[in-house]
Structures are given as C-alpha cells and as structure tokens.
Length: 110
Length: 116
Image 1 (spheres, chains in turn orange, cyan):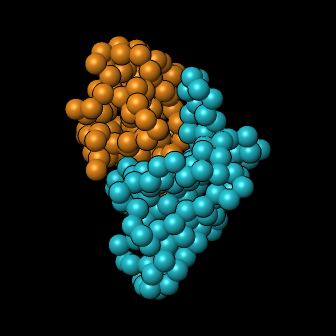
Image 2 (cartoon, one colour):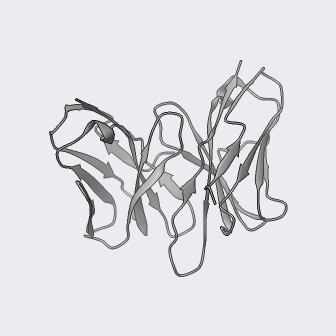
C-alpha cells in the first residue's frame, strides 16, 4: 500500500522553466527523504528533512517539509536536461519502515 | 568502498523456477533492506535486517520469498516457484543505524527479474 501520493505523475517542461513536485500523505512521518532515480539504476538520495516546516536548499532544488510532517514539496528552479529522472519521496514512520511515493517522472527538454 | 552492489543485474527465468539474488551492502552498515519496484511505481518495502537478524517483513512477502543475512554482511533473496507477477526490479539498500542518529539509506543498482 502506497501511503504517499505524488503529483504530478508525469511532467515534461522546457529547459529553464521552474517546477514543483508535491508529496502528500494522511500519515505523519518522523522524517522524509527525496530521491532521484534514473532508468535501470537504484534511487539516489537528494535530501532528508526531519523537522516540521524545515526548508533545505541544494543548488537549484528547494525542499520543504510540511508543518504537520505529512507532506513535502520539491521545487526546481531553471530546470536543466540533467534534472531528468524519476523523483521519489519516502517517509519514515516511527518504526523502521520507509514508505515510498508513487513517483514523478520529469523530462526536461533542451 | 564502491557502495551497495547487487548481482545479477538482470535475470530472466521461466515460470516455476527458483531464483536467488545477492546484495553486498556498504561494509560498515548494519542495516540492510530489500524493496521491490514495478514499472511506474515507487519501491515497496519487503524486509529488513539489522546485522543477521531479520526484524521486519512486509505482508507483501509471500511464503515463496525468503531472505537471509547469515553473517550480518551480504544478503540473499530467494524466490521459489516464480510467477509472472514477480517480474520487477528488486532493490537492496543499506544504512548505518546508530540510535539516535539518523542515517540515510544507500541503494544498489537493483536486479531486474523477468519471469516468462
């Protein structure tokens, strides 16, 4: 069962545009991670957010954890073709399981 | 250390056959996770080990699936009597659990299983 819903599921944009990906749940998580996955490879961790309301920036990527720790967003500024990939959010409950979102497939067209 | 490795990278088998996958985690990591990912979906948790102990198993893990981590280092995932619905990418991840410090999971490249 997927506890985390991501939107949009697919996104195709031109190079230089901005975009936001959302990760929503009715469950509270102790932490939330964002990954990027390329075809045929395992997910690669981008960031971990732990505190409600936390904002982290990684170059052109901005990650926010909702105040209630149920949702998160990823904003990419001036997207580049190298940003193309599957973006996954994953929430960790108070136990030891990680629940992954449904994924957002991003294509940045040169 | 080159990270988490998985073998084989690809496996094609006929329905009803048994298959075994191997995962070698990052050497100092004490936790090891197995996930399954189907096309267009995020990974689904299957099971995890802390050292050699299997601490949690998902309800998704049927009796045909078994995982071991005999010496607390590498792990194997075996699927018996494979079915076409088992076709997926099987991902392994490892982490260093050192309470209360939170440590991230690092994923291997996965084993893609195709059941004909």
